[in-house]
Image 1 (cartoon, rainbow over the protein chains, first blue to last red):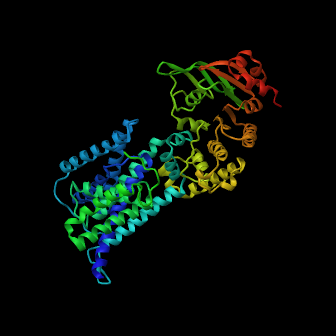
Image 2 (cartoon, rainbow over the protein chains, first blue to last red):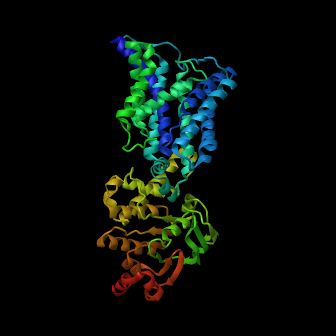
Length: 290
Length: 260
């Protein structure tokens, strides 16, 4: 039981991180029907920038905030320089633009920063709590809290504010949205900025538990994408549930089978869903094939 | 004063001129109809005026200012709103939310400012919500308020689209076949609704195939054919214009002429 609980805690922790990344995928997908494969790079920027800003002598909380802002700036740059000028291009073409952007960002990170692994101190120390024989790191509680709060804020934004509704309208029918006065290009821009912030937040939070590296975004991005697919692209609740499902499945496979299978689990799940249930657990019907 | 002035407007698609050298003026107030056979350029004209298409040549002035080529969301902000021949409803939302999104313009549109001043935002959102509910009442959809839009019958969706267009408080409202596919009773409801809007001072431009509706409600009719103006005037003038009757009104025109 303690063993199971231990795996569950570690699955929920990493799952909450995947959920944050998946929320970024869903936001951009909702606004533009794009899958932004640079999402993982925002996570990398969040971790790496915090590490290097802290090393330059900046207080950790401020360094983390600046790292999030840097990811937002990079996300805005991708949209302004890569997506907006290519208006009229097919969705597949734009997805390839995001893949190109991710390769560029990764390359720059390897040059501007370095190619070593880095870690950050945990927010509330490393002293684990013992719950029914299993240990739970305080950092995990921070991750649960921040992910939960972020999900609540996003829910409030989309369900309760006119701006959120305007974004949903623009996603559903861009033409009609424009004709009631919604600037759909700005909606896409805002979705990129939010996704950048969410990704970087995930990067800041996970770095104390899993060291960061200039290429860490590839795998984290793919896991987040798998979470978004499992939950149903475009669904906020789906992103959360999908993230937790992938995280727990991974932790169980690593614990009961072998840790070598950990990464394979996410990809087996994503393949199963894409073939058997492409709209995901909470997705809308009629996802287009690209 | 003219609300909308179109001058020598041309739009070509490849070699086809959907609208050519068209000039007309819509004065402020009243109900104006644009009629003509299929392919006459009516919908193209709407798309040009609402910024969905850019003109090849020519000028469109709204309240004296050149608006040709401006994007739709800017035109909406200036007071031009429209509905579509084939419905463009946000089917993923409730009836009320559709109208609320239409009120988007009435709110502070800066996201950051909106997020940072929540109390004021809440206040204005309450006002917007009251207005949206009043609009639903007006188009007879109050009881459907919280229903998902995709559960509404066709005629109700037509009125929902009008309510959404009105939520932006337009001065000029362009309606593309609001009665298409509606039965007799639904058409009468729409006619009542349009008359009410005109009384409130909204200038309406109507594209409609239902000649009886057009002849009943219009103060001013523009007849298009092959992208050019064939005739213009009040219902009586247009109905008796031999060119119009011969060219395309045909039987429908004469029948409508005998209608009360």
